Image (cartoon, rainbow, N blue to C red; front, side, top):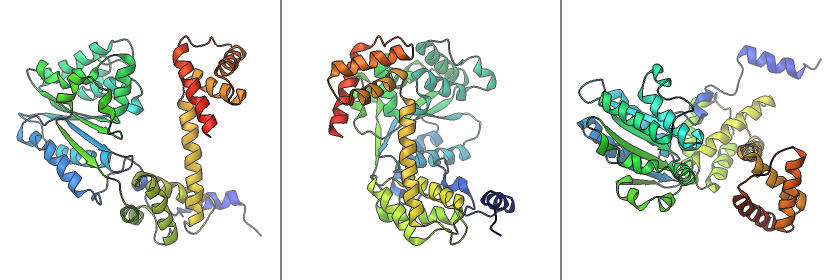
Length: 366
């Protein structure tokens, strides 16, 4: 008698049978004991932050590189090592982290950093709404000064912060780089992590001289290096012989095409493992890597579309309905969609028309 597939999955789960040994090893937040092929970069980041251990303020630091080249991984590891050595004393150090893109707004980013400076009671001091940007920043500076903290603000995807600054007109970069002039006790050092080497072109010239006192560029991984990184993770993440060599090779090759993106390779491996388990396969094969790649692309497009504001989604639908015709017809289609869902059309007509032309050009190229 053939066993029911649901029962088999449940039996395997109850018995602990799995291709995985430790899934956390394949999560993007995992920091391995040894970061392969990033020895020079680790030394440079450590040297930049060494003044902290000598009771001095480090220079601001910008770390550049394509996605998946180990920037956040290396900075996180160096900061963790510093945390291990730092004890409360005459030179108190506090290391804070926020991802500008994940926070989404300038307000959210500053609140995230501010709350890390204070205890739980500080939620009243840094509420989720109700303060001006300048007031939040003043409270951050006050918290640093009152405790005499030597703080390091690590802002991941700092290029997105540059976009937020340009949208709001609130130049937080200028405030950050001039913060030490206001502090009688303590200090503030900015460590920015960016995928975009050109983002500084969008900044106020007054900021540039003091923002990037030191810069470190992470080069892309080669296919061979990605393969070695995968093999190291596989030892800790999967049971023995859980993945075929051909699948490892394919995974490394696919990620190598994505500008040497080791993070994508690790994600591919994790998703492929999950697919193989659901299919009740004995090992991860090339076909599972290919299925994982398709699934990740679908998920990425869905996530991107979900992140668009309502009126931008309506414009995309309008372009599709108008079938790439004139800008006027697309905008007319957009207004009709607004009526159907009982939404007032956006007052930002100029910005919408720019987006219409962009979307129209995209569909024509496609």
